[in-house]
Length: 116
Length: 107
View (cartoon, chains in turn green, cyan):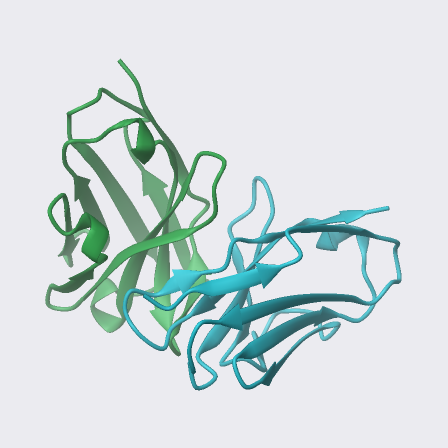
């Protein structure tokens, strides 16, 4: 059974960098592409970007200057790094596997609050 | 960006009712349309991909259809476990975009 689990700090100060990790079990991160999706507080879903082996990324244009994604095959993890965060970055963050031009398996998500 | 307009934003229906949610794309997306279910405390679930294909583990009371740039998710007989927020999403062009969501409740 494929399982995705997001992890992160929970609380980040404004202007600092948010780092999240998605640990994949039951499947190799080398075998597909992987996505980050977020749900800002009180809003709908926003696709942030995707990464596929060996590390090619497509980042949402609105986040290109702040977002990087990486893939660690040895740990079977995908990572997200979002710089210069503001309150607008508060919300739930999900990782999801990409398949048949959709997100077929998701993690539970992790809540991130940007506050001093 | 391709805009996805979803309606209604919320609905309340009785158990056993037929429920329909609509999503309209701002341009032709050639059927690259997916539907997801989000319930608090649970991982989001893909319901439909490619406009009409049912995800393997999802109940057959869920179905998808398309007509041009208009897409519909139908729940044939609403059940208590269907209380959730539903989102459409286009994967025709980047950046992939979602509809605004439809919150479904039981009357």
